[in-house]
Amino acid sequence: MTVLQAVTIGHGSAWEQSKPLEEQEMWPEHADLMDALVEEGLIVLGGPIGDGHTVLLVFDAEPDTIRERLATDPWHERDLLYIEQIEPWQIRLDGRH
Image: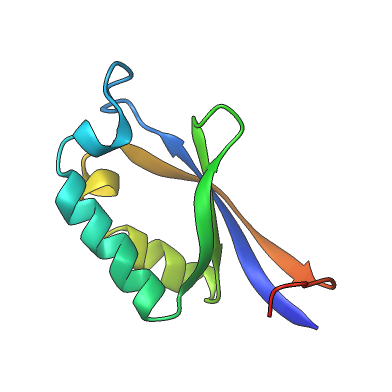
């Protein structure tokens, strides 16, 4: 059985509600870091859920590593995003090939 971490991310006080994702301050730097975390195998899946005010990231990493790596994200540094919750997720069903 695989155990991953389900991480929910919320919009912080610096998030500009009137702007789409790609027009937020320091979008290229944020996107580069997220892409790097995927390439390193730390982020397995990720994307907005519900109305888009929350993002779900599935990490293959320990909570301390997740916090350390996200702390280097310019969006976390500038309070555009913050970690709402980190929960262990036991994968019992997986239809991906």
